[in-house]
Image (tube, helix red, strand yellow):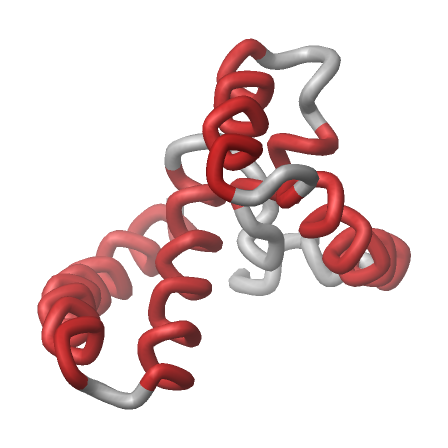
Length: 115
């Protein structure tokens, strides 16, 4: 119960900042620094992976799709879509990110950290 309450209090502060961050990302995308925009899109990608696809917070949707390609229909769809723009994108994303996933799991950094 303590963890849920702490999570709720934290989210009441984070959600407004996330909305402001998204709006800032739109403005940066129109005419801001490319590196800052890329970092924002990457963070948004990881957020979507963790929330919508029940993935790891430190992994992109593309990498997760490659890992789940044999088990999940949505993963095959993501791979199909990304292959239209950049063939092999999800496979390369997973090759780049899988060592990070393995390290985080091996070190137990995915374990509960509050209470």
